[in-house]
Length: 266
Ligand SMILES: Nc1ncnc2c1ncn2[C@@H]1O[C@H](COP(=O)(O)OP(=O)(O)OP(=O)(O)O)[C@@H](O)[C@H]1O
Image (cartoon, rainbow, N blue to C red; front, side):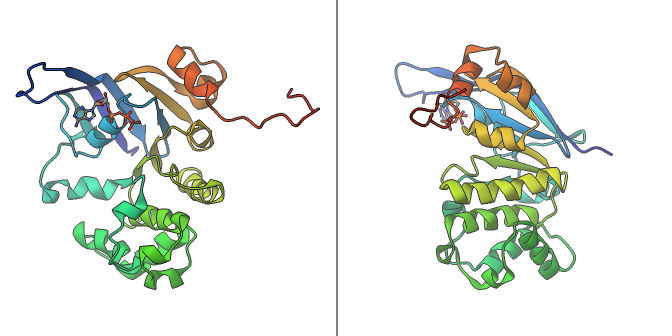
């Protein structure tokens, strides 16, 4: 059976606190829907304030929309106590933007990778699940003894990805996972994510300002602007012929190699 995470007609508006005299209501999402099957890779792009994080929080069952719904294989997904969401957290995992902030500094890598297995009450041989996740992110098992501050930024991000992989999820939701990394580390992390999508067939929702990374990982792209989906389709088609001003602006911002002096760009 194909696993499906679906969001239908999501609306979210934030309003300023009631004690302020001039109440401002800001639309964060309006009529947003998306569907992710295992093996799908979807880039979620848009300018600052477009609604990407709000959508991700709802897909992670961390926030309830004002209207609309999220389902996983037809089962409703809503914020609630950890015990009521274990089934969902096993199937859908999160890769954070900033592993330095999300990995507890006092824990060694082995403990960090064991914790989700215990919290989600996953049976089986935890040590072999941990070693398998490490291998998938191309980290040496000797790193299990280290703590986050003894690792590079790229190694920490791969630990964060391994932590998301240990419960054997079907879908990963990633929030700007390479934004803080310099170019070589960024490429290493993207290589790992590419393998997870293309070799292992995991579903991916990849939130990013980095359209080059989206082009590499995602077969489909959704463009959000002011809380609305303004464009969506196969990534190559969206980039080749953007049909809205918002997408044109994002595509125009993709860095290009400068022409060498005397050698004109084609
Ligand atoms: N807790 C909140 N209270 C009030 N307004 C909020 C809150 N969270 C987000 N917003 C507003 O909702 C809109 C969407 O914000 P959101 O963070 O989802 O966008 P984003 O696309 O993730 O932006 P960025 O790329 O800058 O992180 C913005 O106008 C933002 O200011």
